[in-house]
Image (cartoon, rainbow over all chains, first blue to last red; front, side, top):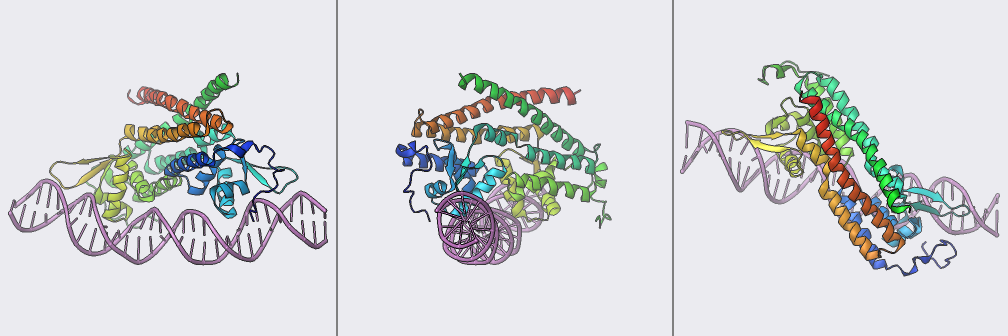
Length: 174
Length: 174
DNA sequence: CGCTTCTTTCACAAACTTGTGAAGTTACCG
DNA sequence: CGGTAACTTCACAAGTTTGTGAAAGAAGCG
């Protein structure tokens, strides 16, 4: 498999030719390393970084495998994860078996910051804790305040993202 | 459930005696599980949750080991990590060999949200990427916008924490 | 000062995670 | 419909991570 592209008829964009692969690789590995440090698994991190550094913001499974020197299986696993957490979306160009993966700025900022599901589950655990330990105990009170904090953050982050969009529109769509 | 409720003579603190260990344990394990899911290692998560659920907000190494059924070595490792990321502080009561670990709300909120070091390193990697790929390339532009986003977030999170403190003071210190 | 109590360090076995080759599945294309 | 390109699933070997017991290291106390 991977019998070197040959036919460039596909992947129409193809201005990619002159990009310095060395520079791309350097960025990909460095940025991925930071994501790993922040807790993300290795392959998803690398795949995501590669997409970020692509000109169109999209890559096919084969391109990812070749660029990162990993098996199709690894690409598949990484992409499944990334799609699940909404950091990339998958598209299939009609009339092809190839899948394309895309990083959509708007979308992944949201995914990154909102982390809503995560916070929601923390809140649930805290709420149970307040009930279980008693809202009138010292520990219960501490948990309640923590819960309060998360609820505050949650509201405020939404507002922050609004401000970001406004700021960006002001700056870029002009 | 609640098997041995018998020995309530220990835990000298007047009202502290009757805390239901079952309820505490349930909270600790559930909350810790959420922390683990969010990327934190297992032992630090459990130790932190136990501190959160304690009445005074402090526990000794021995208490942690007993409550969580882990070795002193495990406690030591977990606490070292938590102290490093400023989620707990260590204190030694004068005239004792016992170390006490404390969760200080103010402090760990900051630790949780600021994540400054992390974001800073992401920004560095992105900045290098913009330079390496060229600020005038499509990919370079994408990285620049991402960098822009992080810089925005960073500024805004600081303001958000201010608002939280104001809100909390309004609510609790009265 | 030496004893005792508590904490930390270290080496290692067990458990888990990761990425792979290979087989299996899906769906375009002729 | 059959061929085949592309993606996914599976079982497993290699590599990490984790938590432990044992030994070493601090530090109050007598």
